[in-house]
Amino acid sequence: MKPASFIHHRPSTIDEAVQLIARHAPEDGRILAGGQSLVPIMAFRMAKPPHLIDINEIAELDLLEIAGDALRIGARIRHSAFGRDRIPGPTGALLATIMRNIAHHPIRTRGTFCGSLAHADPASEWCAVAAVMDAILVARSIEGEREIPVRDYFEAVMTTALRPDEILVEVRLPLLPTGTRFGFCEFSRRAGDFALAMVLVTMRIEQGRIVDPRFGIGGAEAFPRRLPQVEAILNGAAPDGLTWARAAALAAESLDPLEDAVTSGDYRRDLVRSLSIRAFTQVEA
Ligand SMILES: Cc1cc2nc3c(=O)[nH]c(=O)nc-3n(C[C@H](O)[C@H](O)[C@H](O)COP(=O)(O)OP(=O)(O)OC[C@H]3O[C@@H](n4cnc5c(N)ncnc54)[C@H](O)[C@@H]3O)c2cc1C
Image (cartoon, rainbow, N blue to C red; front, side, top):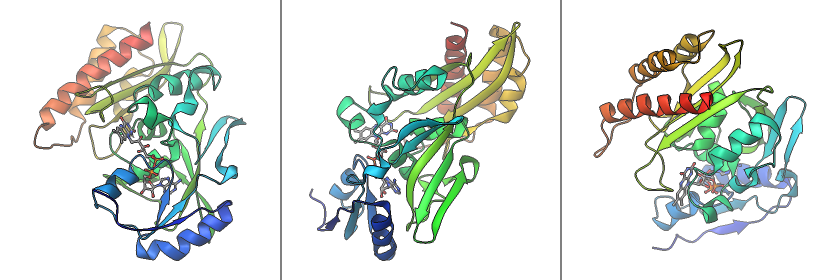
């Protein structure tokens, strides 16, 4: 199918874009970023926005830089920008590893980091990263700019605190300290498909003990989140099979799983247990 007709706006500044979205949001006008989720939805006529505000010509949004202790990611930054060695340290290694799990190469060269957060598919890898790393989301509208901590951002499946008249201009990811190790594991039925579940864990190991653990799940619930009760088991424990087994069992038990016609909640619990063990084992390596 073809999309319903629409007017294509191409602002060249953020100010111009916020004026346009303020005017057209009440009639379901939308921001167009990479178009890798919005265009298929329009082609199936599941959305018929009469106005698209295309942000691809706004040079100000081409922002990928370290400022203080955070990585700033502007709304024009594509998934593929996180290739190996682009960002230094453990944060860069984590982003490069996770990027390779998103869709296929052509989609990665168009789809954007901020677009993934705005779309908020439960199985978005970048949404899981944002949740585990305590991202700050920066939204702009004609009323000005506001910062949304990720803990206040996700509300339900594909539903967030971002208002229809706001543009997500930037995401700030706190940098992981030197020496941080990470493990990431996801499962999807075919390569490039959205994952049925994923686990991301980061930690340091000092004098044989786990320090500053972060543990989160994505794809398995309505939106990704950290699991503080699992982090409490990890914190100060020895990085060994017994700890991994206890933490993975609690992660599976704590789940409020998504269910659909082909994937039961019990299956997702089992997945989370297995993926957790695999992610922990990567940390050991
Ligand atoms: C075959 C296929 C497989 C895929 N597999 C995966 C996968 O494994 N993992 C994954 O995470 N994603 C996957 N995707 C989705 C892809 O990553 C998208 O790029 C991403 O979800 C949305 O980013 P986008 O820039 O393309 O946004 P768009 O498609 O342009 O927009 C998506 C939605 O977000 C809104 N939006 C976008 N940017 C902003 C902004 N800055 N401010 C406010 N609103 C905004 C739009 O209005 C729209 O409602 C897949 C897509 C396809 C087609």
